[in-house]
Amino acid sequence: MGIHYREKTFFTSKDLALSVIGGRWKIAIIWCLLQESPLRLSEIQKKLPNVNQRMLIRQLRELEDDQIITRMVYPVVPPKVEYELSEIGRLLEPVVTSICHWGDHFRDFLEKSADKTAAE
Image (cartoon, rainbow, N blue to C red):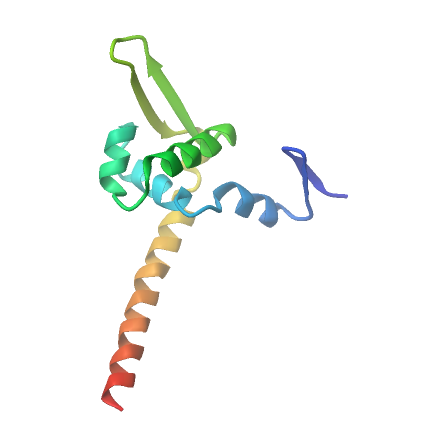
């Protein structure tokens, strides 16, 4: 048995979860939307200056396809589009927060390791 999703088979729900939130910028996008929501594309770009627009749009589309975020298009000229986390997306808050905190600890660990190496 497996979990069939988007023409792929996943052997565990963990594999499925990692395929949905895996991606170079997805955790960062989710983090931005947890801090402030809704956000426009340009606002997300300002918060993530190292991502190019093409990649950002691709990651946003994937998150939208997986129903992690919602995209609201307003019928105005020029077009106004906002992104926010969906209900299932908001459930990622403890996961993303934990990953970000772990990243802080790992950065500190690396700095201490570098200091020890430099002292030797």
